Length: 200
Image (tube, rainbow, N blue to C red; front, side, top):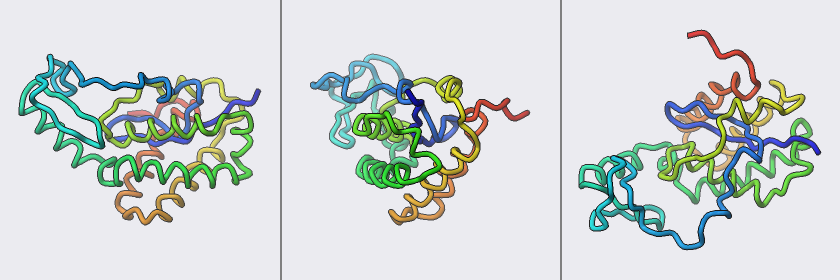
């Protein structure tokens, strides 16, 4: 069976990747059907007060204190995820992106044995987290995820990056946001290609 790639992008201060093997990702479809109000504050880690909440993209988050709620709201507004348009924008980008990837002779063979519906779901979850969305990514780190992908090289990395950039341009994303995405993506090359880390 061929190894497959899931193109991904990292977020602020977190070096992730343009690629991840499907087995490295948590499947959003495996989540419980009923979501309950969080009992731990996502900002402080302390017990959440059910009276201090905010609704973001249809999900309610509870916080330990008003200062935590304020910090959460500020983080949402400042995130690349929010500036790109949130979940609707991620959904549109993933659908358009995969059309390009599956038509690209340089990389489409990596997806020959992949369930693309499941792949798209995982991609959307990862990108939401990677761009600074409120739900954390639970998959493997990029270096471990790519350690056993035979034949993966710079040509493949560049092909994914090109398709990502074209997708964002076609969706009329502002140039400064595209530049942020592409700079972060380029910073992940050593991990994706299992090259020695850059000297500091």
